Length: 125
Ligand code: CTP
Image (cartoon, rainbow, N blue to C red; front, side):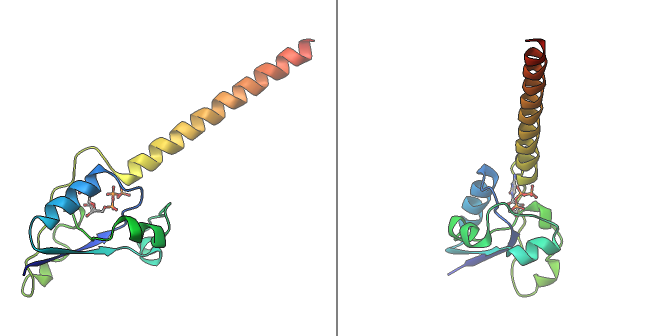
């Protein structure tokens, strides 16, 4: 029985990069144990998860680790095989959050512009 252990994932806004990582890690052994960052650990990592720990725990019942952690766990090599997998290109929770906040800001700008347009129209009446 080969057990694969991975650590360091927030798995906030679960995306295709997370799915691929978990599938590949699971393929390395018979069972996969996924360490999920608690909200407290996230604050140490300066990560502000949108989805609370209790909910993220349901999404990611398995735990994984990718290339962001290369070299960080090398000292475990005497007791366990340490494996890092490359990240899926062009997808990241931070980028998803930035994009959604840009969309929100753009919507706010449009609403403000519409409101001032309406104000000018009303003033002319
Ligand atoms: N991961 C991955 N491919 C991606 C994104 C993440 O393989 N495109 C892996 C990371 O290497 C990590 C695990 O998924 O081992 C959990 O990553 P997490 O930090 O929760 O997600 P990110 O999308 O990397 O979040 P952020 O952009 O906020 O760092």
